Structure formats: C-alpha cells, structure tokens
Amino acid sequence: MTETQTPSRCGYVAIVGRPNVGKSTLLNHMLGQKVSITSRKPQTTRNNVQGIKTEGPNQIIFVDTPGLHQGQKKAINRYMNQAATTAIKDVDVVVFIVDRLVWTDEDEMVAQRLENLSCPIILAINKVDKVEQKESLLPHLQALGERFPTAEIIPLSALKNTNLDRLEQLLVERLPEGVHFYPDDQLTDRSSRFMAAEMVREKITRQLGDELPYQMAVEIEEFKDDGRVLHISALVLVERDGQKRILIGERGERIKQIGQQARLDMEKLFEQKVMLKLWVKVKSGWSDDSRALRSLGYDDV
Ligand code: GDP
Ligand code: MG
Image (tube, rainbow, N blue to C red; front, side):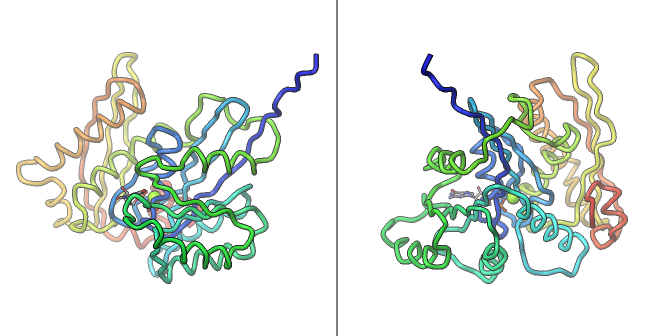
C-alpha cells in the first residue's frame, strides 16, 4: 500500500471590496446557489453571510461582507463597516475584489485596511466580461502588483463564471489542513428564517431601485412547515407612509409581484412548496436607531 490519501483542508475566505464590485455575485456563483442577495444598488448586503463549499477533501467557508464604504453617520452604516472589518481579521485568505480598471476612494480605503494583513491576498479583477480590450487591463494589473507584491492577481467574471475554477484552485492551495467545520452538504451558516427575509429584501431592492432608499427591513413573523407546505409570513418595515404606498403599488400590484418572485426563490432554496404572506408597516426612524437595529437581528451595532 503506497497510496497516500489527500489530506482534508478547511478554512475561511473573506470576500472584501467596496459596494457593488460583485462580492455577493461571486459567492453565489462559486456555490452554484444563491445565498447572498445582489442588486445593482450598492449596499444591498448588510450582514456577513457565510457560504460553504465542500468539494471532496476541501471545504471553503466564504464570508461575504457588506462592503467597506465611506459614511459613518447612520447606525446602519457604522454596523456595515464594522461587520466588514471584523470579517477580515480571522480568516485564512482574503479575496479583494475590484471592478475592472475603476479605482475609487473607497477602493483605496479597502486597500489600506488590507496592507497590514498577514494572511494571503488574492486580488480579483471582476467584470472583465465588460472589458473589450483586455490589454487595457495590463497597466492596472502591474500597478496593483507593485502595491501588493505577494498577492496573486486574477481577472475574472463572477457573473459569467469566467476563471472561477482557477480562483477556487488558488484558494484551496492556501487553506490550512484540517477537518471540516461543517457537514459536507451544508450551504450556509444562516438560518432558513434569515434566508427567507433576505429573499424578500432582494426583490424589494430590485423592484424599487432608487425609489426606496435602504431604510427598509424585513422581519419573519411565521415560519412553519406543515409537512407539505412551508408557511412564511414576513413583515416589511419602512420609515414613511410614502414608502409604504410605493411598495404596495396600485391596487397592491407591486407587493404582489415582489411576493411572487420571493416565493419562487424560496421554493428553490428550501426545495419545498411555499405559501408567502407579506405585510408592510411604517416604523419611523429605525435605520438611525441602534436598539431597533438589534431587535431586527443586526447585532453588535
Ligand atoms: P456587491 O455589492 O459587491 O455584493 O455586488 P453585487 O454582487 O451585489 O453586484 C453588483 C452588481 O454588479 C449587480 O448588478 C451584479 O449583477 C453586477 N455584477 C457582478 N459581477 C459581475 C460581472 O462579473 N460582470 C458584470 N457585467 N456584472 C457583474
Ligand atoms: Mg453584496
């Protein structure tokens, strides 16, 4: 018997970058299943969501972060920055995502926070599907390479699944040897209730875009499996009457659409038939109130 077994590996990978570079998209596409919500609107992700990918001997625990951004005025912004900063402290590898050649003050802010990290960094140049002349990336790649001399740089498209297998390989090589922390079929550390609330929040964000700022939260009031159907009731909290009217739409058309789309996502995720009820309620001033945030499950504000 000369055959040696491949040792098992397991570790944490933080996905960081300013809002809207494609962190949540990358996580979902690496997993092949939606665990983190995405939209064109920045700051869609509010919490650190862990997505778990197990392939044979390797288990990667991805931590999707809300995205470090400027603006500390509101309690929820402070919370989001804190969540992103905590996520990069104790991980084995960091994936720093940037959007093609774009470099903003917020990218710079993220870069500065990464400079003193001791763990390996992989620099992912995302959205290359939108770059027509790939050579135009070269000077940018070189400058980033000088700034982060030990980092591996990889161009990719999270949306089109380009180079994601290569990224996975780079990550696995950098994981410590050890036993898996989660069962091999587990996809996320988040509860089903949390996931259900996120599905509703995603549809609202996508439907309303700029009409509704992110002063909106979703609370799951009922989550009951009767063996045949999953009964879910969700309460959508907004800050003003006007927002409530917009969200409900004429003759309730909008909220109905939101409900239908969210239900389809839930059925995919839970692999079960879902009955979803949505209510909209005005609760003024919650996005500025640490205590109210905590009661909605945004901890550590
Ligand atoms: P996050 O804020 O960093 O989590 O960004 P999201 O994952 O929510 O993505 C923000 C927007 O960029 C969404 O509209 C995505 O569809 C889009 N996006 C993400 N990755 C790619 C990509 O590789 N190519 C293109 N064209 N769009 C992308
Ligand atoms: Mg996100």
